[in-house]
Image 1: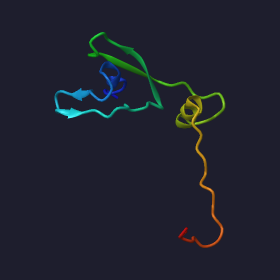
Image 2: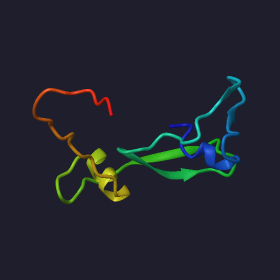
Image 3: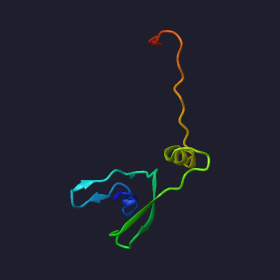
Length: 87
């Protein structure tokens, strides 16, 4: 959780953990169960709160996926044997 929104402070691809000397990924972690309530100016104090329950009875991960607009699709089942194309 300490790396949440950390990559937004730097230009793309240049976020670095100075203590460990390693580069951070371009996209940081996504929070599904908690949300950021307060972050101090120097990011020394960070407070998170547990998200409220969803009105539709979905778990937190499903509700966040719906809010983002991403849809999980089931893989279509293929009938018959797989054939390698030679064309």
